[in-house]
Image 1 (cartoon, rainbow, N blue to C red):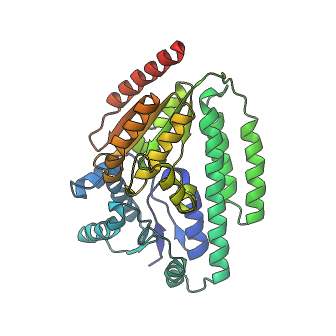
Image 2: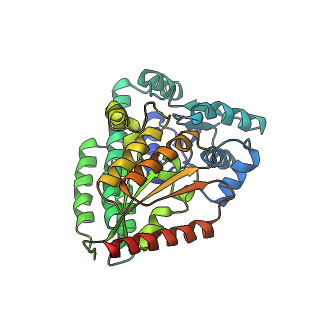
Image 3: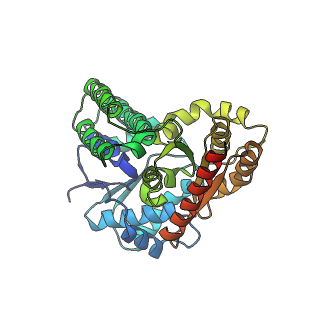
Amino acid sequence: MEPIISFPHLGDYYYPISKLLTLLTEKNVKPAPAITKKTLDLGTKYAPDTVCIPFKYNLGNFIESLENGANILFTAGGGCRYRYYAEVTETILKDLGYQFKFYKLISKDKINFKEVYKMFKEINPNLTKRKFIKSIIYTLLFIFYMDEIDKIIRKNIGFEQQLNTHKNLKEKMLSDLYNTNSIFKLSILYKKYKKKFKHIEINKPKDCLKVGIIGELYTSMESFASYDLEMTLAKEHIEIKRFTNLSYLIWQKVLIKKWIKKKTKKYCKYTLGADGLDNVYRSIFLCKKKYDGIIHIKPFGCTPEIGAIPIIQKVCEEYNTPIIFFSYDAETGIEGINTRLEAFKDLLTIRRKKQ
């Protein structure tokens, strides 16, 4: 049987992840399809009632991949209850009768590169340490360049003169980055596209509304999970800042962990798990930078974020910064989300006029 590798969809990150798996395994890699309502329905049907919605999205994605012929599955793992979900996912899928191999990249909140190398060596006996290291560096750079471009897009996409200019250019950039195997060429392409994005014609007022998005990592990075929140804000001509991305989760978070604990000690003596404490710091940052408002998003029942919410509310009250909270589950309706967002935008506009 031909090995076919797959993994769950997560925003546009399927580009670098797919490239990494192709380089390391030299096998056929088929990313899971983009998330739709069908994905959620499949995950909800077979998942335990108590799990959060990212688990259901991933489970649904795995089922779609297996139905499309995949027989080797990869998952990341996580820093909250999700660290235990890999075993639960594997059990559910095997109980459904699927035959496959299952690999988990993150264990105990860390990537053990020695173990990861052994994992890929099992799939591809010809893999050398040199190629493994080169492929990891290539992928980290790919992700970093993506995240840096996304920062530019969030600041300006709501003010583009021609609709979909940023979206179309990003799709071309991702395709070009994917189709090069050279770290040097990757860097050249990044610089080329960075210039192109900065030269997109925009009509951006100096006093535009600015909103920061904080919250749980999956709903922050997967647009379907947040009901395309960022594009909804962009259509209202709002500048967006979002902190969570793969670059942050893979290596930046570790570097500033102690610093964040120091900056939040006034409000919280202990860590909150996952990105809970990070979001407390982000709320302080956004308030001090005088952002017009903050949007906090999370899956329903997300324990670390539930613990962070009262602290974040206290921060926003001290700085008199408006904040709105959204919790997503399988029953969340887009109409209710949009109604609350519209009211929040009106509030920010009225406050701005009074200043």
